[in-house]
Amino acid sequence: MATGAASTARSLRPDHGLTLLKGAEALFPAMTEAIAAARAEVLLETYILDFARSVLPLVDALDAAARRGVKVRVVVDGVGTGEVPAEWQQRWTAVGLQWRVFNPAQGWRLLLPKRWRRMHRKLCVVDGEVAFCGGINLLDDYYDPNHGELDKPRFDFAVRVTGPLVAEVHDTMSRLWARLQVAREARQHDFEGALRAVREAARAGTDMSDRGIGAAAKAGGLAIAALVLRDNLRFRRRIEGTYRLAISQARSEILIANAYFIPGVQLQRALLRAAKRGVRITLLLQGRYEYFMQFHASHAVYSVLLNAGIQIIEYEASFLHAKVAVMDAENGALATVGSSNLDPLSLLLAREANVFVRDDAFAAELRGHLIEAIEHHGRRVDPHGHMNRPWITRGLNWLAYALMRMALVVSGKRY
Image (tube, helix red, strand yellow):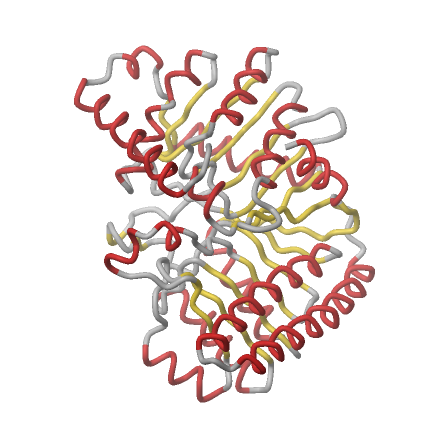
């Protein structure tokens, strides 16, 4: 942790313009506006891309950008999205829009550990000048693929960024595209094409990164920010390490909102140490049943946290999908907005991206949203009630937790 967290601390850079975006209602128009104004390039990555409802203006903007000669590249996850619908494949092919599917898997292939690695990031860069990062899928906020219509929108956040960080977002997206392109050409036995793909992606990344840095200087933002990634090569523990460092530096308050909260041993210890030294810790977690494993396994770790005086609030208005946090520290408030849950899938298997921000105003705005959700849409978990929950519920909690641990053993991971 020390090396990764220290590296993250060094990567915090000034001069960023940041806009906090709550929900798809704020994110989709902002992204659509940026894409509509694109002059040279649009890069997009998302776990879920649903070609319906409030997402349609955004995908129409992608289509229109490609039609006017903008280079548009889209990466979707092979499980979250699956195959792009045939109608849109035809439209995209006709206008020259390029897309790739990350680690496609269906049916029995999902049982293979190598297929558990997912592309869970939600990133977008337009012209190397503006970037978007967060936890919001390209999916209507009032619709859930498994549960249908929702009365209230999902609770989630993203951030619009200008400044030096944009070049880093562009670089990581270019690297992933190059890797997918190489794999595609290699499968077709076009090894010359694979080599050419690597060179072209590297050259494009350098050109657009330079342009992004120039735009950052003009932006004149004051916020200090860093892009923190999690992948299976260079940044295996970076996001978790950054969380643990921030928790260790917190003096009086830690607020974490996380959809799937199943912390490993080291992250649990960091929270327990913070609670022991008097830090007030509040966790805003999923209150609705969504998936068996995540719902029950998270409840299995409640007891140790509640016994330490950590307050757990379950969000009940709709599905909580946020992956955000606000923590105070001696050198200013720290906030994070991103795609990473605090569970084994995100921290050990998925490609994730979070923006960490050292800025009092940004942190205060995010904290305000969390406090409002806690006070008006949350239910406090009573420690006594949790300890005396029905034995069937308790059994399901520990069954899910045991299955999760077994899956980690099969995948060769330690958590």
